[in-house]
Length: 170
Length: 171
Image (cartoon, rainbow over all chains, first blue to last red; front, top):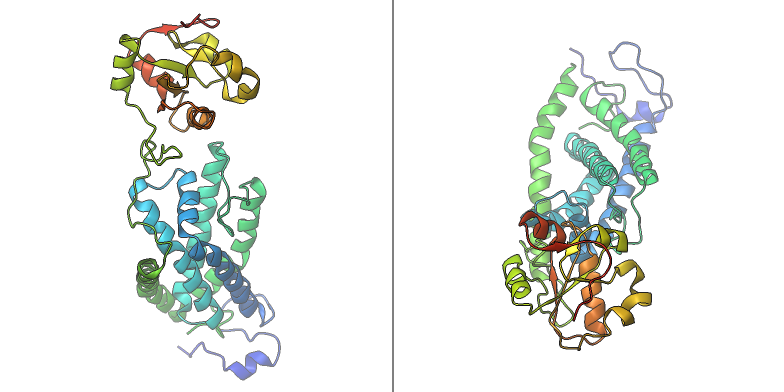
């Protein structure tokens, strides 16, 4: 089977080159890079306040009433770094399969948690980008998360199912 | 599935745990060296979090509340809205709805001395009215205020004496 890599120069030259695959749409070559960077910025930015205020973030996690009490602080300490690392990996294009799986997985889990909170009628702060309780959790917050899922799912598909854009795969 | 995609599934199988471990390590290390560290495992139970301004825990157990009730040694204050109070409350309890506390506070507590042994309660595990009322009473100068968590449900469940309708005259 022919190597499915395309040299970087070819990608820079313009429209994406099609790997051996049926009916791949002609999408611009900068799309995967844009998706990576958008997600990277979101994740890195989201992690900063949580790293700086672990106690407040733990309180925000508690308010969702989902995690068992004993696990709350451990998650409060780990999750922000998970977001930061995922964002860095996405930006650098390193460990892409892992980064893509993590970013997609995290977004799905967040959306589920937020959906559950709203369904239960809890009036909680989102805790998504700030820990000071100013960010309410509303239907629009979930919609915003769904918007982030678009580049994530695009990368997910390209990484784990198709090879239309191989420039960012290692 | 193409070769590349399959290889990526395999790769993410070790990369995800690796990033997870790295994140846990970084979280733990930074926690040990920072000044505002949090305990790795904290007690998030409702009772443990019921702390008053002096750092004292405000929770009272159902057992103790029951004993105090029988000895008539406690003053129960219902923090729920008036309609809920009317449809059922701890017998002899005073109604002081948190949502109307400013208007009703003076009248409701007129006959209480500042060191009266007070127990506030509301209904449900996540109901915070009782705690809010307790903190308010403490700030207003009452020295012996405590909270019966999930008071109304537990009181009913144990078949303890209840009352209905308007306020009882509480000596």
